[in-house]
Length: 109
Image 1: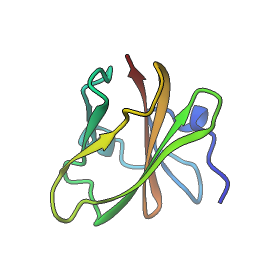
Image 2: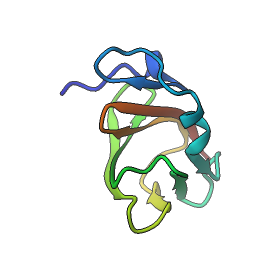
Image 3: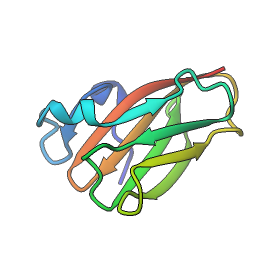
Image 4: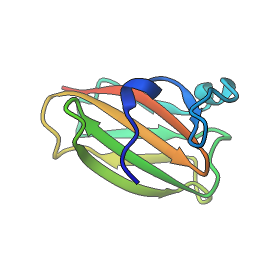
C-alpha cells in the first residue's frame, strides 16, 4: 500500500476507504509528548483509541518514511518510541488502526 499523502490527513482522523472525517473526538484521545522532542524519544498515549496493535509511521518533510513500528496497545497505553536516530527538523507521525488514521506534526530539537 502506497503511503497516504499526510498533507491531506494532517491533524485529522480519516476513514482509509473514503478519506472522510470520522468521529473527531478520537483526535483528542491520542497524546504525543514531549513535542518538540529533545531527549531522543517521544511518548504516544493512545487513550481509549488503542485497538490491540497500532501501526506507527514517521515521515520526514520530503515524504520519506524514517521510522516504522507496530505497537501493542493491549498491554499498556503509554508507549515510548526511540527517535534518537532522527536529525533536527519537522516530521509527521501517522498512527494507523483498522480503518482509521491519526496524524500530527512533531519537531525534533
